[in-house]
Image (tube, rainbow, N blue to C red; front, top):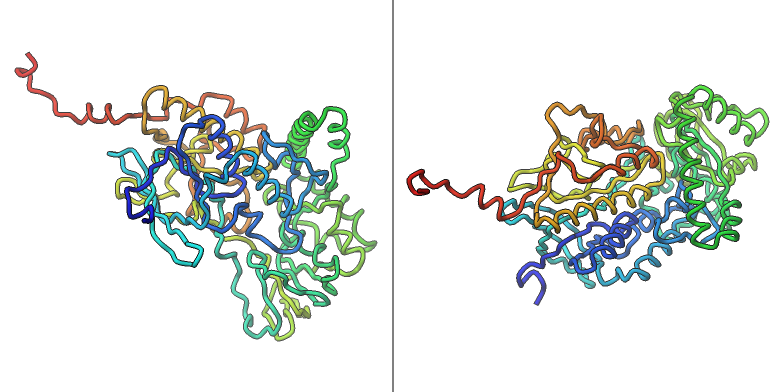
Length: 511
């Protein structure tokens, strides 16, 4: 008999998503509350989230792994800027070391979540795909839900409409859907886009036995690019001096402070920062390279994400002559490449559309409260973790200007404090209420295209604590030092609700 044929299972906490956020949260909760019944629902066959989904050449982190890894588990590899396979191995080690395998259910896709105030629980509709491909429907109930689903659609990337696309006789690939074992050896490649994916792809496609003959980065707008060593030499010395754990933590805090200093400098002194980045880029480019056309963005640093070139590999590809940069707009695709608005033509056997993501919170789960649909765009985020008006639901959105995972540590500890408070006082419901007149602004402070396209569908953040979401760990940490339990949180229990709803006896009956 399937679980759906019997009484629905009930859990204290359901985590949705088996990526770096979900796995980290599962460790925090299971270590603090070993007796709570918890499950982690992952829609795909494997854990890893982003680091398993994306398989394009060179896929790696843009953050150092001493801050991108968990506080509770050391990053042991000497490579500080790590490729996805190393990150996947690290996540699997975490699952094995903390016994999370018994909590994880693969191929469990949550399609809807309905909150019942009377029962103080979430009712989750789950599509479960069996090994033979059969899909069956199950119901799971939960006191709390932690949405660790990331912020983009896993089933599709963003690709603009290109005139003449069907005329192109070569291959067109979006990095989010890179074919396994795709052979691009000897091909002329055009990569459309200049974000982190393009900066990663280009040097990677020019290495090894499968190397392309030439790769052109076609960009509409330049991007800021900075370099960083793949191997942190000081970290290796600190580890020798302080041991594995001591060296890891020392490196972690070294990088937290240095990253903060860089962000602070770039944002406080944008003009000087532009000149500095231009100078550093020019040093790594061939003599006479047109730096101001191809590496002079029209916006200030950190209005959009900065890209990272480990060991300057992207610039090295240009110096060697097998990579080039073109700044122009696309007029149309042709049979053998791309025609630009300037009239120039780029020949291509393969076009890679590194054109971005489609944002979507909670994997597109249909959220309702007592039968009413939840409008995420009208909610405000409390302490970066709860949505105003949405009971017993925690979300995970990491930093844009610090390592994503630094936020997960703060969220995990705050969630623990919240659960402990409710257990102590016998509450079963917690909901945040934004004060009337709370000023709001976009939840993410970047002007990237995928952010702008989706901002009307996303929750908002406030303009003051505790409704603000800082984009840098050290600044956000100040808020998290304060109490989680404040007067904007409303707690209740079934007994309290029954007493409030009970009819008042007539005056004479009380005598």
